[in-house]
Length: 297
Image (cartoon, rainbow, N blue to C red; front, side, top):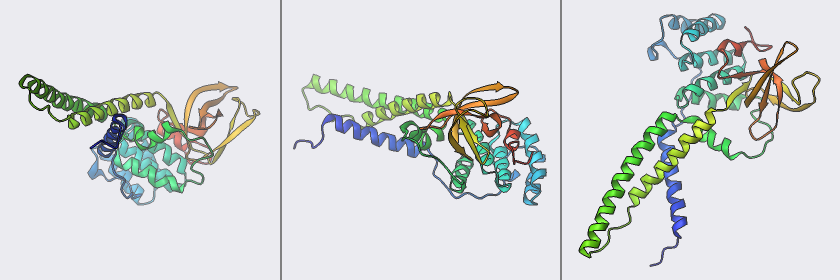
């Protein structure tokens, strides 16, 4: 019976299956998020951390903030500290700062369940999560895969699939040679080896995409609203508005007349200049998220 699919269609379907399997393995499932600080029982941080958690639960947010910031200076990019600092920002109604702190944690720990769930939990609470933009396939893949998995995990899995695919295909090739020598029936196509090969190719491409994505410095708007201008000066023409919690790509920084400016791109949208303190990046000190106008220092 003739197959209903061409060889190319079969390969596309197998590659799609491989992509779905890989995403299922690598991307953690979303879970409910509790806006409560992570307790000392789940972290190896110093005893001062417990004092910070106690202060948080007692609604002494400023005290908890200072404790966590001091600890974070000793343990940079610790996901537990950044999670709790983001919770403090959320309690202080600074949703952009909270989002920025959690995204900073994800920059170093992209598959951290608590941080991923925190970002997904707060996104619907933003007053304006996004503005009009063209559909960007790269950003769609980044949101569902590239930005949510560890490059170490993709490299490790790709090596395992390469080894498995090689073993299956070599065994099939040996069986094929024996069949020719003995003039017997040829072995069936090595579908398992093909799927393993496609998984390897897919993971290899994902690893490359993650590396390319990490070259961009991303930031989060931490003020309620800002105008993105055509030049790094207050009198320049406004191009579009960016809102609290939106993610942008930071292209460059410049100091003009003692004022710091950053050139940013809204993914799928425009590019322009905003004040440096209006965006918080993964490379900024965590205290800077609390230093924007209207945020308690």
